[in-house]
Image (cartoon, rainbow, N blue to C red; front, side, top):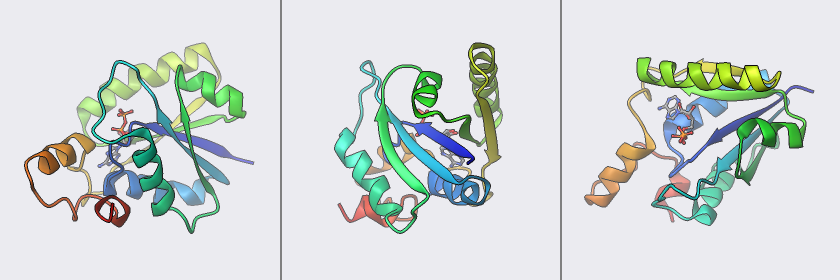
Length: 151
Ligand code: ADP
């Protein structure tokens, strides 16, 4: 069984995340979407809201489960006996950041990171832009799945 974890903050999940997840589905038997809890980070949506947005988005997809975790992603992978980390790449800044983390994770474990390149039509979308639009009263419906706007 090939199982992957897709870790992130998902504050909130966007159509960029959905694109990466949908394109990774044929590659894995199971994908665990793992919402990382970082005590130092301030989130716009509660953990429960972020979890529900993702659960609703993929309610018809049996290969996907949603979990939360704190601590190192590789430790959570080991706990679940998962060998692959899935990440998306949008731009050179993502690449530099992800490279260092993936190489560190390889040094500390034998967990492999699999990268999918963002699709042309969602590459500009980020949770932080969605939060900015939302805070300023804008319409986010073209940037996020329906589960986020039907809250
Ligand atoms: P983190 O705080 O770990 O970066 P995010 O929720 O922002 O969490 O992102 C989780 C993953 O989704 C990361 O690998 C990120 O690069 C990827 N991602 C986010 N937006 C997009 C997008 N528009 N296209 C491709 N990948 C994306």
